[in-house]
Length: 452
Image 1 (tube, rainbow, N blue to C red):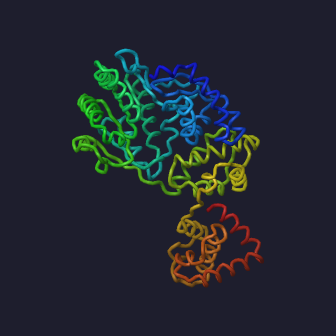
Image 2 (cartoon, one colour):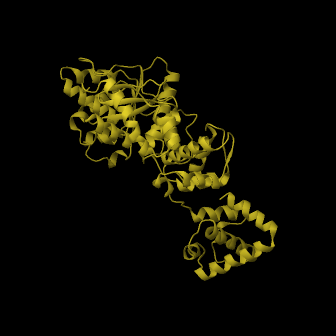
Image 3 (cartoon, rainbow, N blue to C red):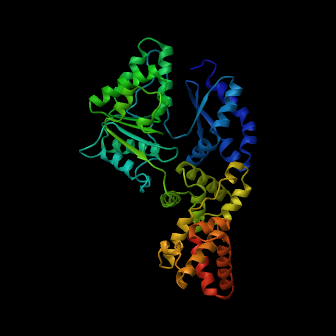
């Protein structure tokens, strides 16, 4: 640890930096509630562990403000630091370095109790990864397990869920979750200490019956550290101790790794988490809404709106929901109904341009499928050249929805029905004329659109 970074100095800098942080956050309510109340817990190896008010504050600060806060504190401390937010009641330690013991061994290390299988939403896109995780608790399992997938698809949640379940079933066993970045820092620190520090680290990790390692791709180009990890890996697997790793790429696509490493990674079970579809994202969002503070009720159209704006990244979806929750807690009574209009009002109040500019994507095929199902006809027929009266009516409703609800260009709408833009315009006009006269149809279509 840098000797200049004592608790008193950092605490003082943190307090004086809060005014500068206020201009970055640019939201008085959030600053007063969560930024001004931050307190230094302790310092480990230039890592500032900062206490925050609750889980919501921790998640928002980590997702949206970690980089600017780290930059400001590093500037005022005149040295590069890292920042970790935690709730006061949490036990967090990346380890204290004292003489020849680089990191204190803990029986259960860094497992986040908030991530478990109960709140892990299983859908088609992550079902294989979930089943692989569950195999650990059965008689037949693979070792190691290598889970790959893009950012924000639930890999970290799954690792912590494995750790929590394993600890519950095997209270006498030793469990550790660690990010590759933390592992690298630990090894570098042992190099600077010299002596037998590196061997002590190896011994520590050999004690864990379950080792969960996040973002293994960051070991690329770290030859010395790779060698140490390879040694730990081989020893643990040989003794039947379980290793589960995650990466943004499958082993065969990892660059700057020795072939022997990649070969060991695929010696057990490799699973890829693919991008979720809209239905999967909807299921995940609905599950997260159930556990929200405040008891707010989200309408179907609000849920669809959120999903279409965040349909590729579960972490982004969760961050978007947190921002909505923040505004709801500050502007709405408990158990209030949140619809599209309220969400749009929140967006207008927010000063984050990136949040405002998130696109409202829509899959036209999904819209056509939902409307066709409501009319009990085949979507393939609706998109075909069939001209029966019933099919034509449904086709025109689909065109009307894509144009009026999603502002899609006429030419693009026509491409899904093999029609030109003039035919699309005529179809939409026919529906609008009918809607003016037929109240029952108007109400039916209004309810239908809300479900899209």
